[in-house]
Image (cartoon, rainbow, N blue to C red):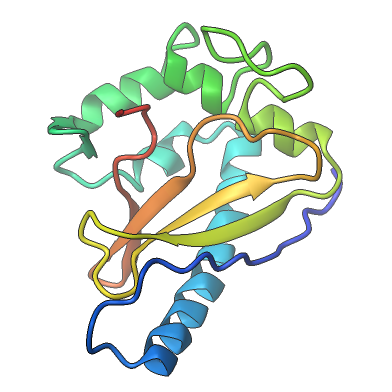
Length: 171
């Protein structure tokens, strides 16, 4: 297996009024460094088809999806079910139901297997409880290749990084 290239893209969320710019940027840099490490672990878990490891990153109360919550048990079932959108987007070989862009891999696993230089990009999205930093997200990227699925966003609880709502298309 080819080694992944790790990179950090810190796309800043709008600064909140009164927050010192340098303190926010230092905190973002620390969070980005942690999330690149989390992304490298996720890369191995996705390539290893380790459903249990991914489910372990879903909070016990499930994931937010728009104005509702998706229970952890449903996420676990969907990750295991080869016919589900979530399984196809994370692990599948033929692509997620509904098609894909020409030239793009059908799943994150396919992207990670087939592309030699995959970077882990970290961004911070405004809103949704992200505070002054913004909500931290990672995306696996490669030059000239569209990334399957949505960025994987996180929140930290008790020193651990948990997924938020971004495993499903929640628009």
